[in-house]
Structures are given as C-alpha cells and as structure tokens.
Amino acid sequence: EPEVTQTPSHQVTQMGQEVILRCVPISNHLYFYWYRQILGQKVEFLVSFYNNEISEKSEIFDDQFSVERPDGSNFTLKIRSTKLEDSAMYFCASSETQAATGEQYFGPGTRLTVT
Amino acid sequence: AQTVTQSQPEMSVQEAETVTLSCTYDTSESDYYLFWYKQPPSRQMILVIRQEAYKQQNATENRFSVNFQKAAKSFSLKISDSQLGDAAMYFCAYELYNQGGKLIFGQGTELSVKP
Image (cartoon, rainbow over all chains, first blue to last red; front, side, top):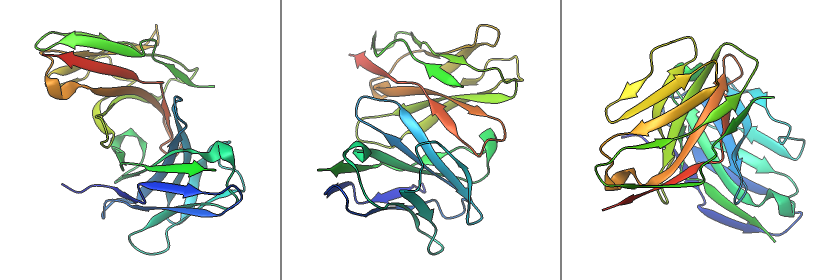
C-alpha cells in the first residue's frame, strides 16, 4: 500500500541554522500538508499546498518557514533560522482531493531537535 | 476560533469489551467535517472514521462508530469488541469546509487494551 515517507526521522540542529525537512507524498496525490506537534501538545496545522501554491497557512507559518515542491516527488519544509521553540515532531500529509472527501495520509514524522 | 477538546488523556479497555472516547468541538460554522485518527506507537496516523456535519446518520466502519450530536457539538468514538491492535493514541479532528484541508486536532486520548 502506498505510504507517505519522511526523511530524516530525527534531525538535530543548532539554533539559527537552516533546516530542510523532506517528504515524499503518495504519487497520485495533489494536495500536500505540513503539521507539527510540540511534545505534550496538540498536532497543529502549518500549511497546505496545491498546484505549486500555498492554499492555507496558520499563524505559526511565518516568514521563517517556506514550502516547496522542487520536483515531481518531493515536498519540503524549510525553516530558515531555527529557534529552540521549533523543536517538535513535523508531520507531512498528502491527499488526492481536498476537503474531507480527500483523506489525508500522514507520514511517520521527523523529530526536529534545536539545541 | 475553532477548537477541539478531548477530555480523556488516557483510557483503558479489556479486550473484547466496548470503549467510548469523547470529543467536543467549538465552532460557529455549519459546514464542516469531523474525523477520528489513530496513531499506533511509532507508526503513521491513519484515518479511522469521518462524519460530514450535514449528515444526521452516525458514521460506522466495522467495529468503529460515532455518536455525532451536532447541537451539543459532541463527536464520540465507540470501539466495539476491542482488540489488542486497537491500542494507540486517538485524535479527534475537525475540518471546516473550503479551508484548504486544514485539520484542527484535539489533544489525543491514549487507549490501552488489556488482554
């Protein structure tokens, strides 16, 4: 069964460094998402992406964050200058269609630790 | 603002018994969708069941069913004939129609199943 994959599984970085989290969505999916979960807190929506454009973004998704689909398979989340509070589990998801008719399939997550 | 609340951080059930996980949400909108996601230990989040707010009939998926009370803004998940493989973190989520697929999650309920 097709799955969303994410690399790396764990990333450690120093404060102020740039980090890129990578995701490979399911191949026929057209809608892509990033969520994060700070330890002990809720899973929070960051951004949704379709047709090479951001569809929706949350207040968390400020100028430090960007997303890109650099080729036909990858979907990336870049954090330009990481802060301690960016430490979290980051989940990528993809769906075939939007709205609730399109089930979002989640990846296993990347644990980002900022020191 | 839309919020989702799961008031039970942990629940436990005996194998083959029935358990109900609670979820309430707050919204002023009328067009939305509700979901239960399951996250087994160290595995991806997967969709268990979804409910469209305009449908009065409660959704069912095999051993999983919901009790959707729109006026009370309540959306509980019932798991019948619990199995060891049901042990996981369960997240209730809400999606407003036409908002870029943005899922709003509750805090999660960790379900353990006793043999």
